[in-house]
Image (tube, rainbow, N blue to C red; front, side, top):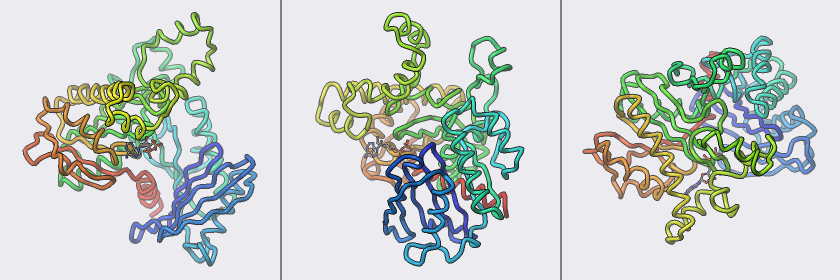
Length: 398
Ligand code: ADP
């Protein structure tokens, strides 16, 4: 059984083709600059051989048609005919309160995803375009939607309500939704599988820290709280996002610097976080880390602001759950950076956590990095959102 996983952005279409019989990725790639001059498809076959296909891509349907041509081509191809694709799994960013799990896409589902556009104005329209491109190009194949928000739908009102007039929740749906759900879902389950723990009986904190970042508390199989909120802007400091700030800063800047709403929005999403505190030098953890290791003042301050924010959430979530059994580290930074893992884990001594320094010295694999005596197990689990989308898709069409 072959499953195509699609992640449609406003000008891109990422894909992975899975063979569910052995869980192997048999092809993957990205169509870039759709509807912009200089379109390009970057493709990788199952053996890791890379090839590039330049050529303008008028829209997502054309990009998908070209991707499918590559998938069946005798040279780069992974399958001999499109009939081998049994289902398509789509990453959809916002499912609001309507979707608590993945679903088979129908006209009604598409209408609901459309109704939710005000909550995800950049992402849901692109996701719908990806779905419609598949319906047009692969009319016989079922489409499944896997939502970034669905995993967090077990959160209770005491954790998802903001303390603003209740009518804004009731009328406009302003509440905490949380994002990166597919990643938190995958790494928390995988950690329990590796550690032989019962998911429904474990207190877990998952830390997804890459260019973007969020932290989730999961108790006995339910999400208690998560650091991203109504939008992905809340919570951790990120590459270019500010995360938590005093909301009163916004009217203050509008009054005193004459910034418009759009300028404030761009400042908080694109000019803040690491980039903002680094005086626009870089938004990448690696550069900050290099400076920190070399003892530079600016970088040391920035990395501390960053790790303090992570520690704040680990502390709060431990309190919310009245304890924690497993802390899972994932995504670009925490999968790869021994330095940043150590900065965080060394501050968790109060929880009885002990880091095994030797074991911590590695990149990008599944590994326990706490000592056997540690009261809380700290484990690195590389995230795999596409696998999770393929798994849900398989389960819904099988
Ligand atoms: P995204 O959050 O966009 O999905 P990733 O999870 O792939 O992205 O994370 C990419 C980010 O991970 C990079 O921007 C970089 O900041 C960080 N990163 C990658 N490798 C390292 C490393 N060795 N040390 C520190 N940070 C790293």
